[in-house]
Image (cartoon, rainbow, N blue to C red):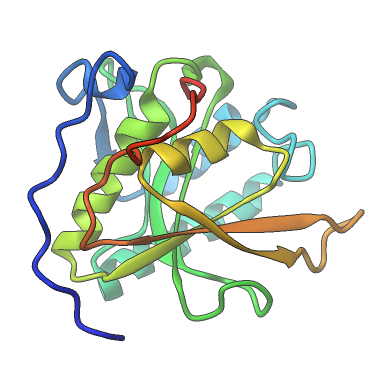
Length: 205
């Protein structure tokens, strides 16, 4: 990859247009524990949370496998999908990054992602946690990231736009009942982690 020029100082988010910038950090990220598999299974077991992910939470055994894989990513790469804790120390979901895990789509790229339990929606947590992820990835030397979003999922697309990500190519989703598409958003990490200057009105996710 072409080496990036030194990054300009990050833009200061405007609290008037970005609720996640209105207060100091409220969230904590940690490498998922074995116990977090159960917590993820519980907080994601809601039809609205899983609307674009099959409609229901995966089996608990898959979450144990999933969290174990994230611990391996953290040990090998210095980043993973981290558990997100709110101000009270309660698990509200995950955010972070991992290598794109499928043969289709943006193979070889680092994908960032976020998923919150339904009770945590509408507070700006997803954007706040994703910005924390980008800073951790910069510190780990990651140069660019992608996010794959179902085109119908306006809430996640809004988060991607707030991060300054730009919509790029679209891929057919393989191996999912009913098919569908995934839109790839891209961001060079030499750029500030903030909304583009002409960002449209977005939802508070």
